[in-house]
Image (tube, rainbow, N blue to C red):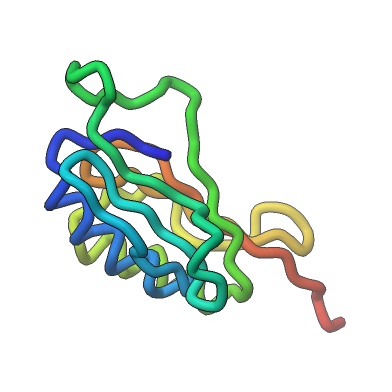
Length: 123
């Protein structure tokens, strides 16, 4: 779950980038939107919400939301899609450790988001 100060803007952003990794918006109220896998719409995995206490949403220092993605190509697409929608680059997609592929960005509210996958080198 991440907080937002502009739910409609955040929904537009997350609808687009989460579609790349097969998550679909399955619920929306005046205060939140929920997302689940396309193949299991009952299994909500992510929320974007305005703060319950009605205070301004702020980012967590050291907090990161990570999404497991099933291929390096989808990690690349997730990252480029987010950047095209106004996200800030925090680390381009690439291998960080042997067999591990990550990308980092900040969403429109400054929340740190990671897309990652695991793979085996075919040497």
